[in-house]
Length: 150
Image (cartoon, helix red, strand yellow):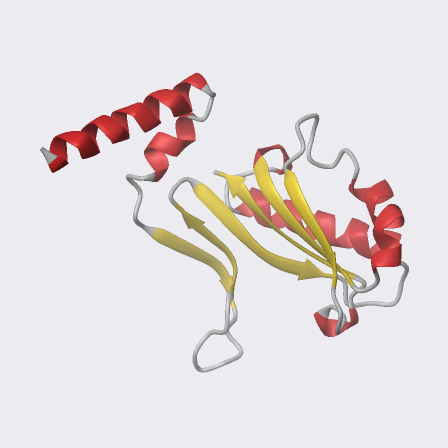
């Protein structure tokens, strides 16, 4: 009985995903492999990966801009780095579903948005933006991470 309910729920979820145009949701549950890209190699035990593919999604680690410049230059650089990482993982900016933006100073919100706007196509992803109390690591004015469909 329990197994029958589980199968019905799986079918219902897959049907709803199909109706909503989320065909990737059904296949995501079947893929249990994990592929890591750009793993840190400067330590005996790696600290983190630049990207991980799992279950039909790619998770991109936070990217920062570690050079002198203003928020617009930093945002432009970070978005280009995200795009490169997405492409190397077999995805694209148009397939991004979730973005987190971390600002060194929340006062840079409007200027960051000027560069950010339109970079993810006509159907932008959901986004969270926060000002980081202690500052973004590495003296970047902005750090951005994302999750995308592969």
